[in-house]
Image 1 (cartoon, rainbow, N blue to C red):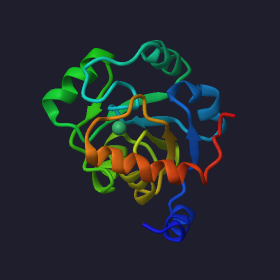
Image 2: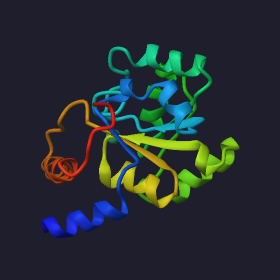
Image 3: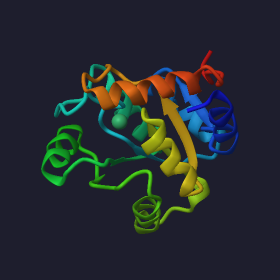
Length: 174
Ligand SMILES: [Mg+2]
């Protein structure tokens, strides 16, 4: 993929915000940007890839956000059984097999929850599923660095492209 192509692509589908991790997404930040609800990716956003428990600090982050009135939901491409285990552990409502980057299930979730698109942001670590999906659904997007690099070759390839894209972005929390 040429650098020029990536540059053009990023101009069209630039994430609204790019942070190091979930802890930079504060209630104050959300309120300042008109965000009432977050659709959260699970793997490598809240937990290590395909594990059932959130990484340290995430549960207290969730509690703090909810106490400040920010609504939280899990929206993942994972299969129902596994996602249910994770979502139950963090005690959040969830949408499974959301087929990101396709926008249809994202839009369906927003409608079901009774929000307007402008009120919602999608948070995730993968550009070509989370960010692209959020962009295609016409909602705000918050891109995070992944928690831990995956071992598979296909993932390593994706991460390599993402790293190139990140070089064109300025982190919103520094
Ligand atoms: Mg992910």
